[in-house]
Image (cartoon, rainbow, N blue to C red; front, side, top):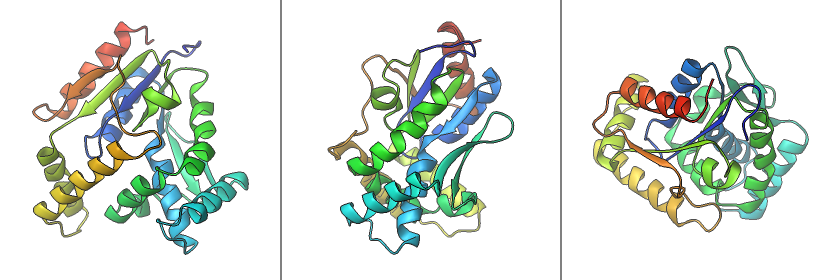
Length: 232
């Protein structure tokens, strides 16, 4: 899987474990390209919502997302400083993707085979040359099962709910801890029980529990693992 630019680092784990932040910093430390695959699924939910399609309408969501990908209205694009971004109708909807509604919507649409198939090639295309960090739910089990380094980044549900509340409040959004904890547990259940590409830890993944770790310690641990697997 490795190429001239390095190896593939796959970071999977449950919602709220800090994958996006950690993956971004790991990519920066290694000089790799970051591919935020979770944003692809959030963007898919946004595309469906904007089209007036219910998240529970499998055929409608699959058709809408597949059509958006086919016409280039939903795509990944290389950005600055080794980052990629998701574009919806030519715009970067970053703020819209971070809402609780899009988080739950992403989990719902990710259960649909047609959506996953439409997005699979977009993810693999950015990783074929190596030198990439990808984060999501099934990077090490489905998207890049031969990745040189697979990390399963997790934290307790209680800690993930606390972090989510802090994040929302910093953005001026009122957040109730009990409600957020219930949403975290519901999301975990959805992700682990879906029939298509359920969240699970790859047999050869390295588990990193960040519940009691400082963010920089998590990054340092994963960077060390990557260098031990041949990252340059």
